[in-house]
Every structure is written in C-alpha cells, then in structure tokens.
Image 1 (spheres, rainbow, N blue to C red):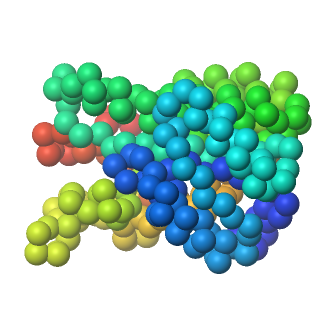
Image 2 (image 1 turned 30 degrees about the horizontal axis):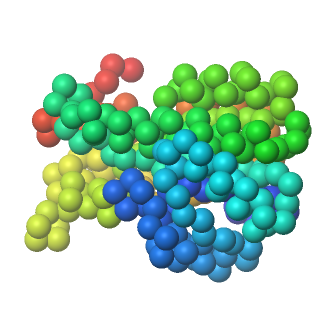
Length: 241
C-alpha cells in the first residue's frame, strides 16, 4: 500500500508541534516545515504559532486554520506536541511535571475540544500521534464515535533519530551509541532505526478513509520493540509480554 492510494484530497488537517524545539514550536521552523509538507504533497499549507498547552490558544489556532483554508471544519487533528521523559518521577520538579502534563496530556484535550467544537456533527478524524495516555484516547473514542463519527487512536512512535534523541543515539565522536545499537538489535522489523517517514506514513494510514473502522486503538510504530523500556538510570528493562 502506498501513499498514492491513501489520498487525503480535499481534507483539512492540523498537526501540532511541527516546528517544536524543547516541546514548543518556533514560528520560523514551523513555517519551514509547512513549506516542506506543501512541496512533498502538493497541498496548501499555513504555519500557525502558539503554546498549545495554554488554555484558549487552541481555539485561536483552530479559528486561524479555518480562515486560512477557507473551510468550516477540520477533518484531521494530529496531536504531535510533546516533551520527552527525562529523569525519574520522584525527582521531577513541579515545573517539570506541569510542562510534561501540559504538552503530553492537556494539549491533546484542549486541541481536540476546539476542533470538535468547531466541526459539524459528521466531520473529522482524530489521531493522537504520540504516546499519550490510552485512557484519554479511549474516552474520546467513546464520546465522539457514534455521536460524531470521529475516530480516536493513539499512535505511539518508536525511537527515531531526531535532534532530541541524538544525544542518546550518538556518541560525542559521531558513532552510534550503545543505546542505538541495542534498539536496532531488538527490532522485529527491518534491521535499522526507525525514521520520521515511518511515523508519518503510519499517521497517514490512520487518518485516511482506509482506517475508518479503526478507533480506540494503541498503535505502535516501533518496529515491534515498544515492549522495551529505557529507564532513567540508563539501563534497559524488558516489560513482561
């Protein structure tokens, strides 16, 4: 199955965190990402800027998107903003907890409420393209499925070589780290690290009409290694399957 037969022609979508730096989106980078998407898919694009974990911002962003696309609803929402886990829970400061829950949990709720609130009863598809809480996804699927025809899925990316992951996947000399080698060794798919394209293609499938009966699901895009957890102490711990 290729991108060609997963057409999203005529669909309007919001992808949060597209130009993120330290969990927040920089306007210049967001504009570059939007341009790249337009060049890749031949679509109309616009870059919007705002802190999606702040109440009220989501309403403004959705209104700006509707005006920019000249549409009355958003078909697809991909909640992509988030911050990586650093350190243990007991060592986390109140500020760190607020930041993590703000971007990993509250952002999902705020954006979804805004998109659904400004959409007609039969519009839209919701995809959480990050490892958010399963309970939130299940709740949205239950609330919005039969009443609004909206699907909600939790798309959980595996490790990919992003700028944030680079310190963990690459040694100071530029060679692959022990963490990188371990992740590749335990993959059950191709013998390589995942890529951003792997994640994007999975998201494309989930928000397409081909996945119209897929909802309330946790979908791992990790090459089959999402049962492996890297602990804050720098050790690998295998979860019981």
